[in-house]
Image 1 (cartoon, helix red, strand yellow):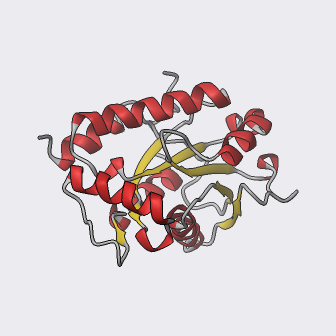
Image 2 (cartoon, helix red, strand yellow; image 1 turned 45 degrees about the horizontal axis):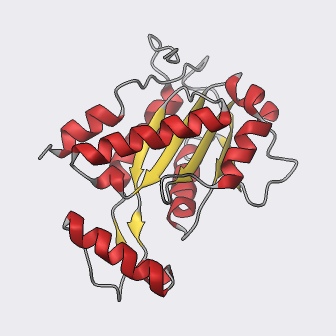
Length: 211
């Protein structure tokens, strides 16, 4: 069984961080997210709050309810966040990225992929996430400058009857929590904080990956 460090290394193996003109300048950032049970929305709000701490201006928007203000052309950088459900990300996110592809590509950008598999240790978890991202890039035409895999949550109390028992079975197979009377958050907030800080700082010797 692979350890957590090995998993993190493998899911990020082609990642590079964007470059901003100044680490101290105030930027305007757009965060568009897709959420199903609410964990990706919580993660997105956490990221927006972290970005705002140094004084950056941040707009966080649910892709299901886009506004004219969520035009990537009006921002210095863009973060897209979506969660995996049955091997796919939210349709609203796919449509948003397709519609604004040129503008997203033209500025520093990142993709936050939220899933339960991101908390796993097995090879099938890593390979499954790679396939999800590959399918996403194929559907949208977008190759993110950087990708960060974020562990989601077992939100048993938000599932309907069938999904609750399906997720319980998945958790049982993976050695996860199976008490369906409560929720279990797997998100590593410290790791997410480090990624957000690195994204904003943009190491001077780093360039977006062309692979």
